Figure 1: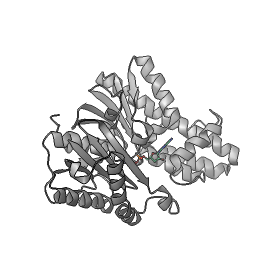
Figure 2: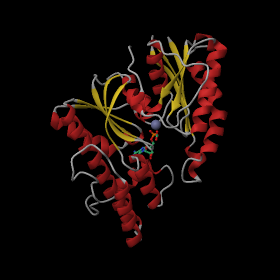
Figure 3: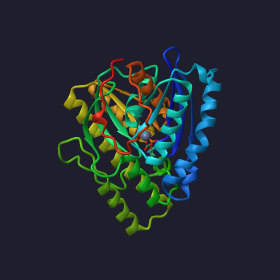
Length: 339
Ligand code: KG4
Ligand code: ZN
């Protein structure tokens, strides 16, 4: 079965083809980051319009990359939620219509299921069951994955997502949007230990996260010090260390609580080098292992949607002709897949 995957939940148009024979045949992405940079965040209507412009050319490109024609497709998967309603509707309407025109099935995929299963696209994929830390611009959660579709949420953020905290702190430090990678680069130049920011919620048990207090703390320091360039780098370093230590400590707790020895880190913040290094040290000390999707599949992409959709289509799932999207969609409402 060859499945075309379409991701349009936020500010990236991702398109890919995943096949039973050959795996991931092609994937392409268009990021709208530059489009939204002037506004300091994603403007939903601009996002929807840009998805309209990009999706057809990207489909043509992945078909050409994989040497396939439209008639070679056996199914189409699209992100049905969660995400921006207008952006989701572009992908859903396009995917459902194309599937109808080609006379093939379609399936709506949960965006977070895509992120959770993305490491399965790698040669060294994690054994099931595993614990996943999903850290993106919109979500921060620890999930126990027993099999595709069977997700137990161990802990979530009570306020900001980790990527959002990176982005907001980057804005405070005068860095361009999206700030996560820029803040990480600035932190490389900073001195460790000059700013010892709070490690949120490490002083009590549990697997919940909270980042708004840390962000406020950094804001107060920046307002008080009016830092020069060198001090800003030190602040970035202090912030990154507090974030990383907190995230990794919660991963350690989740491994201990579940008894699992495989940890997956997925989502955009998973690209952070300091997080990767700290996670490697933590799992090594436990005789466990950490798995990542390659960087291009950590952030939003069509490949993860093609893969999750392929699993569900192989399991017999079919979307109806209507294409409802779910801007809010609890992960725990999904049904397990018989793959
Ligand atoms: O998964 P993703 O592409 O989109 C969402 O579904 O949200 O994640 C994007 C987030 C942004 O907040 C971005 O700043 C953050 O991931 N990010 C990073 C790094 N690279 C991306 N945060 C910290 N360090 C990085 N190297
Ligand atoms: Zn995402």
